[in-house]
Length: 82
Image 1: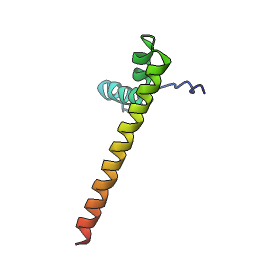
Image 2 (image 1 turned 90 degrees about the vertical axis):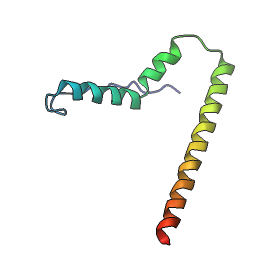
Image 3 (image 1 turned 60 degrees about the horizontal axis):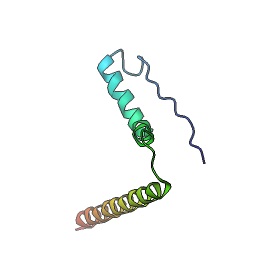
Image 4 (image 1 turned 180 degrees about the vertical axis):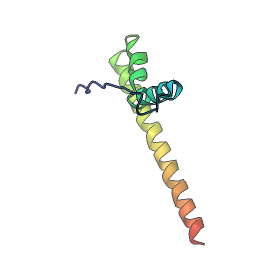
């Protein structure tokens, strides 16, 4: 499954002509689109088994993080009820 190509652009109207803000916004958009991650990953060849392993590790990390967020939200909700 091929990913869609992502075109990231920032115009001066969005940032009211502030160049520093434009750069920051561009960097945020590229991070959100994971463009820099793709470039870093494609820089060197990775064996398919290594790709699978990294994918499993990322998924496990994401599950743990989501679980921690859910538990923290429940604790905050319980604290407010008291």
